[in-house]
Structures are given as C-alpha cells and as structure tokens.
Amino acid sequence: MARQSDPPVGLAMVGTRLAPYDLAALAGYHAPWYREGSGTGEVRYDRRGAVPLRHAELATDLSSLRQERRSRIGELRDHYATRLDAQGISLMLATYALGPDGYLVLDGNHRLTALAQLVAKGCPATLTEFRLTAPLDPALLPDLRHYRGGGRGAAPGA
Image 1 (cartoon, rainbow, N blue to C red):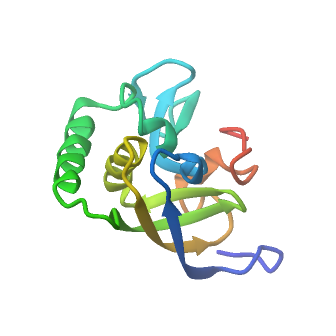
Image 2 (tube, rainbow, N blue to C red):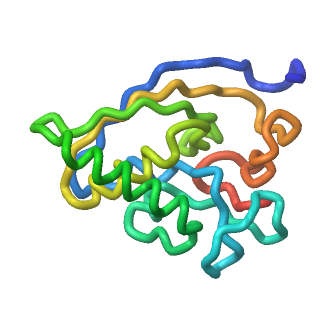
Image 3 (cartoon, rainbow, N blue to C red):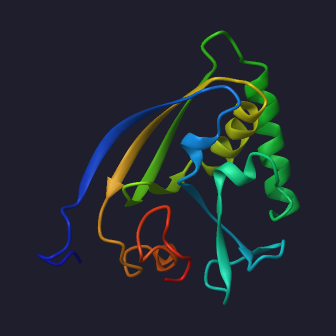
C-alpha cells in the first residue's frame, strides 16, 4: 500500500532509558486510547472529537480510562513493584513512528502505563522497542487518522 513517494518502511530496535521521576522521555508516546475533547471518559478512536491519550499523562491520571483498563494497569503496576531492583524494570514494546518525536504504542500499552506510574514515583526503567516506520496512512491503521500531521506536535485529527 506504500507509494513510491512515501518514506521507506522499516523496523528498528530502539532502547530508551527512563530516569526516576522524569516522564519527559515518554512525552511522545501515545496510547490507542482516546478521550472526548477536553473532557474525561474513554471513547472510540473514530468518535468525533476523540483526542489520543499520552502515556506521560496516564502516569498521573487514569480518570479518562474505563474501570476495567484502570484495574488491569493497577494489577501490572503492583506486579512490577514487587520486581524492583537497583536496575529498575525493563519493558519490551511495539511502536509505530509518528514522526521524529512521536510513537503510537501498538503492543504494551497497559504495561507502559503501569511502568510510567512507577517512573513517576522514582523507579528507573528501560524500554526496548520494535519501532515500525511506515506511511501515516489510516488505510494501514485507522488510528493514524489522528496523526497525519506527524509527530509530537501533530494536532489530533489533522
């Protein structure tokens, strides 16, 4: 489905170290979960006005998520907290590059949110990503409709 004018499709393994209390490295990581406009409450990606949630925001506020999702994240956070050591926690994810500073997490969203909560409380962590770079075409992945402008600065629905 890629056109010749599209950037090349690629897959890379990327490592990111998360320092304790520092969520800046997660600023560009988006979950495939959405809230409606500036309000709270989880909505589908195709709902008019749906705004993608970022993992850095979810580290401190889960109020936009459904209760089942919040419970699963809490279970994972508690599990990871029992495994803490001097090195922190390591996590493997699959992501889709949205531009130079943005990533849609394809697999590992509950785990990354749980980990982000621990980082916010002082836990060091390491992310290993399998990062897919491909066209930002909603025909490939419907969620990409929110990122057509690319990257961290992309306006949802742009």
